[in-house]
Amino acid sequence: MRSWLSNRSRGTFAAYCIVAAFGTYFCMYAFRKPFTAGTFEGAPAFGLAWKTVLITAQVAGYTLSKFVGIRVVSAMSPAKRALAIVGLIAVAAVALALFAITPRPWNAAFLFVNGLPLGMVFGLVMGFLEGRRQTEALTAGLCASFILSSGVVKSVGRDLIVHRGVEEAWMPVLTGALFFVPLILFVFLLAQIPPPDEGDLEHRSARNPMTTIDRREFFRRHAPGLIGLVAVYLFLTIVRSVRDDFAVEIWRDLGTTGKPSIFASTELMVTIVVLAISGAAFLIQSNRRAFFGSLATMWICFVATIALVLLRRSGALGPFAFMVLSGAAVYVPYVSFHTTVFERLLAVLRERANIGYLMYLADAFGYLGYVIVMVLRNSWSGSVDFLRWFELVLIALTAASLAVTLLVARYFSGQLRTNAPPLRVGAE
Image 1 (cartoon, rainbow, N blue to C red):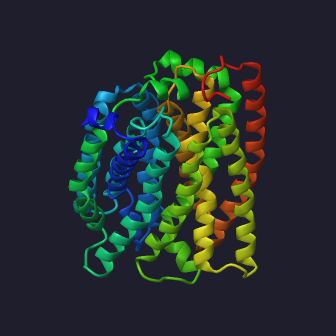
Image 2: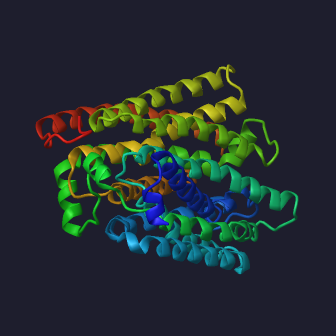
């Protein structure tokens, strides 16, 4: 099948890659996010609300996975990726089954175990798509999966609880079971994708596994800019995770309980907007212009996010419009890191590196920041107004992102001008 794919048109090849990557990661989310569709009310555990304990446990495992992935994902050979994806998700599925049968509160430990392997799946899937002339379009399709799938699997989970009478503890593993066979099919399709061709290598640079020395030297050369990018990504991860994990509570505080399908409806609209904006970046031939253009787009989204909060508070924006538009304003810059920012930065620098390293460096600190926020939130006394908390997080972190993005753009503008690589096709 690889030889057949190599001889297809660019449109056919792109469509195949998007379907395979989208399907794989979509199915993975069925093993990660369904439990957030439950309310998990009842007596607190370890001094915290029970749902917060569960979310924190899984995110802690997911965060540790990201730190492990800095080395494992960036160093893994392409031949091992597909088998690794299936193995990691299988471990997560077993953890969900153990979560269902283990008494509370000790079953929270299995959500930590569930998050531990899943954190490395994205980088492995991304490895099949990076370093190509169409990478932005391909990774936009991949990223659409974690926007849309989160809403869909929560809708499936709520349906199992509300209409099928499934207990909350069993809902996550049963939701995952519905997606296991499709997962195997999509991973098989993913494994057939051929490596980048000569044109891809010329335009975007080769993406090789990185040794410890490679990672250390790359970071040393570009530390100020990378630290700034990681900081912005950290802020975006916190905002996106709060919106995603507490969607049920935010909708409730907005005065809209609605049907389970409301999660899928809002995220479908967000996905369409994000896919159109992020995927179009591949049309920009100049790697340098695409990189700085992505930073400018992010800056505009940060301004829009603050404006949306103010409009909702003034009564000019309804709940549905607020959730869709704020979701798009957060996800466009978040997805830009996956599709364009790191991809085009590597294409301009043309150094020995890969997206797996940069994404896991950013993801590790992003999720670590989210864990810290969760702990701080639970140090507050009294009941929590989730909508107000969400809006405070939106305003504070997007304002910080505005400032840091400007500093990052200034740093790389100077560095790429003084240390410009030899001119290649697409470099300017």
